Image (tube, rainbow, N blue to C red; front, side, top):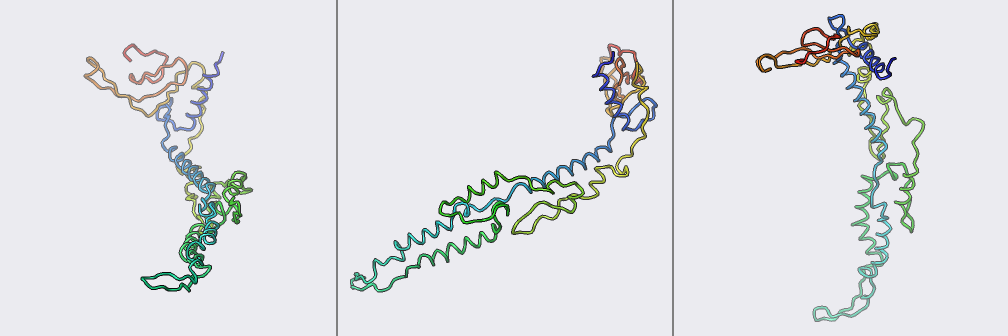
Length: 286
């Protein structure tokens, strides 16, 4: 009766063997294809690059805290409420005061908008210049329309609600590697947008091993007879070199041989004797 686990292992080895090139020995199989690493590396670069571009597109630009905190509204409140207390006060108009031993009448006021003008010149102009250079777009990188927070100052709440309920844009949200050569989904409102994802046709060709430019495909060979029944003919080498101490007390002589594995159950690899896979079990010294 066949065991599913053993059959699965046999199938795996069959696939591996069919994709690799046979060595000089008719029944020896090289289990390592170094050129395959080049293909895998380019595939990894493409996948990672596209993932980074998507993340950068989905992570939206943060907004100014000055907008979320309704800074302009509180600045206007300060100008309206604090003016009469300071420079806009009329308390001293027409009053007679003692100034350095001389009584004088205060008959000059700064006007009812002096604090408004001062704040506009010193604070408002600086804030507007800063926001214009760094936060000229709508909220969330242009995704949510900018609007006055109103008397409740609820700008942050409205932006959070919009961000929480935002759905995936359609239809072109996920791009193929070929589309990524000329398409960059990363927007940058108010500034030059990104225009190069780093994806190239050369990477795509290498990742797909186009025209076998990285590694030539080996011609499929019928390996089933070698892994059927109780045959020990197929030896799969791992490209690992084994070094062992032999001789007196196992220290006087170093023996090297190629490591390998046997596909079929009941076969033992006796590479140290140069015999490959065989039904003969290894000795106690092996």
